[in-house]
Every structure is written in C-alpha cells, then in structure tokens.
Length: 219
Image 1 (cartoon, one colour):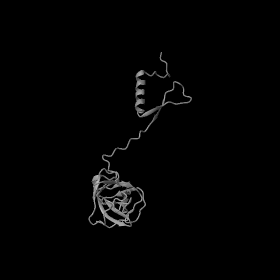
Image 2 (cartoon, rainbow, N blue to C red; image 1 turned 120 degrees about the vertical axis):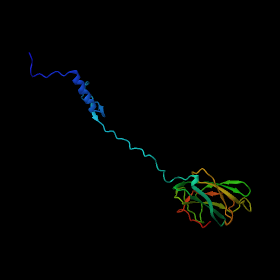
Image 3 (cartoon, helix red, strand yellow; image 1 turned 90 degrees about the vertical axis):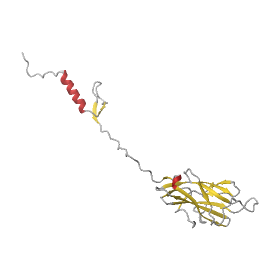
Image 4 (cartoon, rainbow, N blue to C red; image 1 turned 60 degrees about the vertical axis):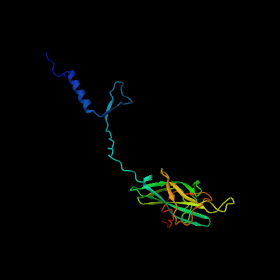
C-alpha cells in the first residue's frame, strides 16, 4: 500500500551535490561566528568579502629630483676675492654641470694649504660675509638646477695676533661640499686681490644659494 502526500526521502548523493554547490557559491566568503544568543551548534555565517588588489608596480621608477649632488655633477673653483679693514674673503663657486637638479645642505669641509706647507682646517660659522655684506643665514637646502650655481664665501682675518707682524699666506684649498664624497682642489687666481692669510684660521659658512648671496664679479 502506497502512502500519498508524504515528502520523498532525500538521498545521500543529493545532499552531497547541494553541499558542493553551496561551497562553490561561497568561494571568497569569510566565516564569521555569530555571538550573543547563538546556540552552541549553530553554523558560522558566511559573509562575502571583496579583496582590494594592490596597484601594479611600475616597470621603472624615475629618479627623485633634487637628490643630494654627487661628485660627478659638480665643478668647484675660486670665483673672486675681496679685502677691507683687516678682513678678506675668497668666494668659491659650485656649479651643477649635470643633467638633473641636485641639492646641497649644510657646511662643506675646507682645508687650506699654507705657503709653508702646513694645512689648516676651516671652522664652521654663520658669521660670514660675501661681497662685504653679511647674509646672516644658517644652513638651508640649496637646489642647483643643471647649470645652477651655489656660493661659498671663505672668510679670513688679516690682522696678525700674538705679536706677529705678518701671517702666512694660503696657496691653495680643498673643498668637500656637504654630502659629497670628493674633495675638489681650488687654486687661487693670479688676478685675486691679495692672497688670504692665516691670521685667525678659515671661517666656513654653509653653502649659499644665489638668492642668499651678493654675487661678486670674478673670473
């Protein structure tokens, strides 16, 4: 005798097919266990999650403009000199001869060689002069575009001390710009108005931009 109106019994193969379909539909879901009044045997709730993809890395990165100048980018030379009332200066010109902008920040290292063969290392100072005017500025970031110039006015005293009547003259210098691993030789021009003397050492300011400096005339 057949009983009508009752649901047919679901077979195990049918249940397996349903589970597989649910698993495929919920690919990319994350299981979140409900808190609160959920019964101990309740199944975790699956919530769809959209994963943000990382932007593709560029094939090549352009060099950062305004990086610290390198030794191959720069030329360094004596530009001019001046003297007045026991004070003298030698202006050193730093030029970016490269094809990209670069920067200099801070104090260079300056070593002077005297006519006696002795060497004198410069001392950092913001109390300096260029063109007989004091810019009164501390270290700042100086950007040199291709062909651009920065200035370094080295300052000296011409007044002998400790009973001396004269001071030994400098014959040459080396200048290592800040952040650059190369010492550039700087020869004094024959047309310079007097050679700087070592009466009280070398005062070395931070590198100055053209806007900070009264640019002297020179070769």
